[in-house]
Image (cartoon, one colour):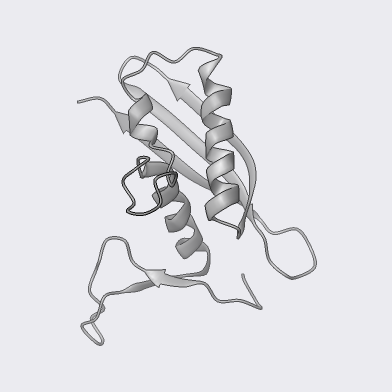
Length: 130
């Protein structure tokens, strides 16, 4: 649990808060996880005025990845998380591809100003060709 800071963001699904009829919010670890997903899923050039933002993992879905491509994707994810999400300390990325799916698992730690090691967090994506 984050003690010193409270990270708050708008729910990316724009669900409605039943108490005040406003857009729901996400807090703490969920807000950070949502930010990591946003960076990974956004294609380069999609965000106005910041054309470097995003990994664009969908671009790799229809590529035939080999063992040399996986470290390139992992380094791009790490570069993007370092540049655009300073609350995250990147740990590792695991990428598996079969005939119809691209599975991506990103492990990271949330940097907090407290003693002790924060728990390992992970984002799992499974992209399927249709």
